[in-house]
Length: 483
Ligand SMILES: C[S@@+](CC[C@H](N)C(=O)[O-])C[C@H]1O[C@@H](n2cnc3c(N)ncnc32)[C@H](O)[C@@H]1O
Image (cartoon, rainbow, N blue to C red; front, side, top):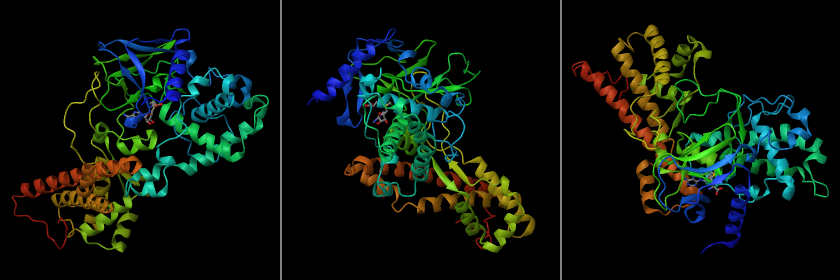
């Protein structure tokens, strides 16, 4: 059943888009309602499309950013020296800071609030009509829904309170100081709570929809740079790119957005069959991060899943492996420079990027253990060896202890999730958990699979070490718990 209101907004948006000088939209593609599949709007091929076809062109003038919106011209002092090099697409850590020019992120929020408040006086109003007002990104989940993520470290990265403080410190004061600019004549002023909610909605839209735009006068391509990787060191401006952001995305994809001088073009990077969806690529994100930023999960992104281990948990594993107490470990730690110790470690598969046709080849299992974690455990073990040579008599034992500690840390992390990977696999195969809980289930399952791979890999390393000793040098169970 088609939804006439939804269809009308899409049609109006398409007409509006095509009216921009320099815009193009290929006759063999169309915007479709994909909400049935939980994908909002998307763009589908109506007939077979050959590789290299330009699917659509977005003139730079149609992009919303500080250069195209009138806001920066109306309050030039505020934007005087926008810090263009802050392009991580995230709120600043120094959320309480109120002075200085707004960074890229805050600037785009201000511009979007301004254009939104202009209503039909904004050049982009038909575009605002197709932007979402509700989100499945983690920021909007209830505590009960977040519980489905269990021990996933993505929960600690949501940053709702930080965003709130940033809006209060850096966005609201500018809107309130310039009400005559932000509010068109005769329009109702928003209350503080309404403004905060609007800033959150716009912040979430930017997080899931905005593009990093290569600055026209900056040569940001660096030699040897992978063409899919955005240059986050160089000077990049963020912007909302109508139509390019109607594309859904996946880690296996068929289209690419090219940044040109006067426009952005979207091109087919391989033949696309009639009925297939045109898909962009958001980068090698694991499902936790995909859910946090974009509010969905995908089977193809599972290969990029990550698990974070805290150093505290690794220390617990170390104590158990070496059978030493807190006091001894405390003494060992004092021998090390605290500045040199990392707080957290990431396990990921460190895979190749998809090829130029958006396809991924090769193994999707973990091939190596985190090197930084191995180094930090070894730094501790070296001190232990100096203080108590009988605990770690030689380098072989030290390596064994290192891999055993890693394995124990992975096991402890896995034990922090109340259900097993098998339990989750059963729930997933029953297909009974839908919506947000279903996506959380997929995230936590992927993390457990990765942890199990890490456990298996550490066991292989330990077995190889033991085998290289001729099999007779079993580690002393008393001295070293290698299990
Ligand atoms: C840039 S927009 C794409 C257009 C969007 N579908 C719409 O209707 O406006 C990004 C958002 O689209 C959705 N999305 C993108 N790719 C998806 C996919 N592979 N599966 C499900 N949802 C997807 C997510 O809600 C994401 O936050």
